[in-house]
Image 1 (cartoon, helix red, strand yellow):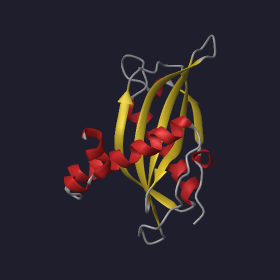
Image 2: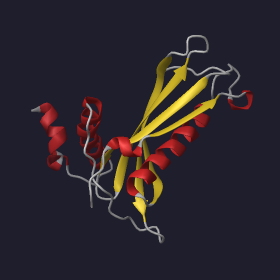
Image 3: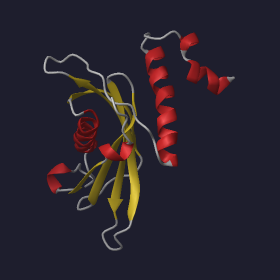
Image 4: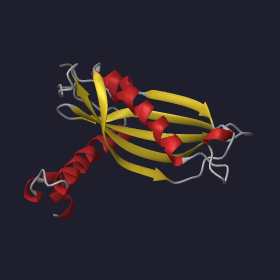
Length: 169
């Protein structure tokens, strides 16, 4: 399989925050943002693998900034690392200032997707070759996140988590 670059999976969704999508404080519902992120991440994973993909986990979500009614929200998702059949998707959420047009990062998330065949069995995906400094940082950190997740789930012996151990040695 030919390795791919994260930029090949880049997915950008831009939309407006409507009244039906807000809470009593007139900010975007967290669940609505999660759904937008899941859609963008799904497209990114599909672009990378060219297979059917399913959400395996939501590894991290940071709601750092409220997104008010009427805001223009951009969700950017791309594969940060590919393993055997799974892919980590890193998602950045941007809010556009109504007057200046400047974009500010509001939130971020990390999802994991698995590529599957028509019967739902996992299939191999191409590896990732990061290009930018940020892509390289996210690529390296993805292995630590995966090992931590496996250790916490009891699927990996902590002594075998070499990337995690390297943080403390």
